[in-house]
Length: 411
Image 1 (tube, rainbow, N blue to C red):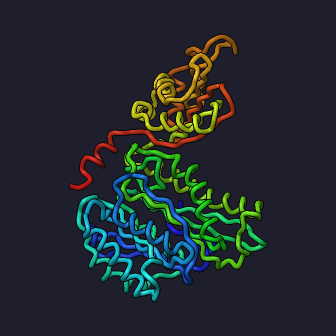
Image 2: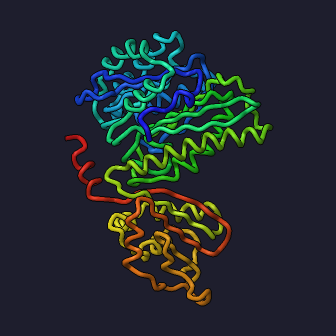
Image 3: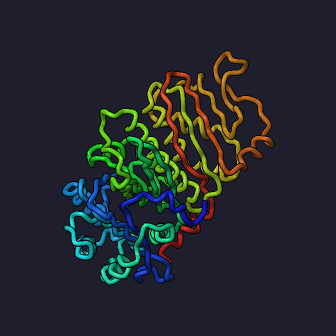
C-alpha cells in the first residue's frame, strides 16, 4: 500500500489533516481532524465493553441528538481518556466545544475520539490549543488525508486506509476509510478506531442500518488477542456531495451497490488490522461451513480464532489439527465429530477415509504441511456436514513479539 491515496479517490465534501499537539512525547502526529463542508448524516457503532471511555459516551450522546447533521471528528492518539473520572468527560466536552467554536456549529455536531493509554488524565489544553492551527491546514488532498491516518496511530507499524466506489443514479460515488488498531482487538466492537467517508447521499437511519449490517461481517469478525477495547469506534459520514439521488430502501439494486462498496472498505480495513497485529507474521482465515445455522458457524469460527493454542501453532507452522477439532468441540454448538472435516493450510488432515465411515486422522506429509503453513496467509476450513450455515473469521498468529510489545507498553 502506498502512503497516500490517489486524489481521484477522495470523497467530495470533506477536509482532513493531522498535526502534533504535544500528547506524544515522541513528537509524532497525535491530533487529527475531519470536517464536513456542510452538516451531513453520520452513523456509528461502538465498543460493547461495559467500561467505556469518555469520548465514546460523548459520541453516543451526540449521535443520538444530531445523527442527520454532524460536522466534524476530532481524534487524539497517545491517550485514551478512559477511566479518568469526571475530568475525562469534561475534557471530551471541552474538545467538542473548541471544535464547534471554530466551525460555527453546535457542540453536539462534533464527534470526539481518543486512543492510547488508559487511566492517564488527558492534557486537553494541548488539543484545544492545537485545533485552530490544524483547522487552517486541513484540505481535501492526498497529503492531508495521509497526515490524518498517521495522527490516529499508536502501536501500528504503518497507516492503514482503503478506497472503493460505486454508481448511484448515474453518479460516481466515492468511499475512503482509515483505521488504527494492532492490539486489544476482539469482536463485539467496531474496531479500535475506524473512520469511513463517502460522498453518497444517504439518510442517517439507512446509513446506520448499513453500518450495523456491515460491521457484523467485517470488524466484528476479526480478533487479535480477545480483548475488547474501551474506546472502539467506527464512524461513517456521508456528505452527499456526489450529487447522487438520495438512497432509499426501496431502491434495492442501488442500496446493494452502496452496501457492497462500503463493505469493501470495511473488510479491507479489518483485515489490515489483523495483518498489522502486534507481533504478527501471518493472517489466518477461518471458514466454517456445514453448520445448522450461520450463527452456529460463526460461534465455532470465533472460538477457533480466539484459541491461543491454534494461534501459536500457526506461529510455529505446526500442522496441529487436533487443536482445531478441540476448539470446534468446545464452541457450545451442535457438531458430530464423526462427520467433521478439517483442512489446515490447504491440506486435508481429518475426515472420512475414502468417503465412508466416521471421520479420522488422515495421512499427510508433515514436512509439506509445515512448508504450506509458512505462508503469510493461512486458511483453516472446518466442514461440519450438518447443514448450510457458513461463517468466516480472521485472526493472526501469536508470537513472542506480542508479549514483548504489551509487557512494556507504558514504559
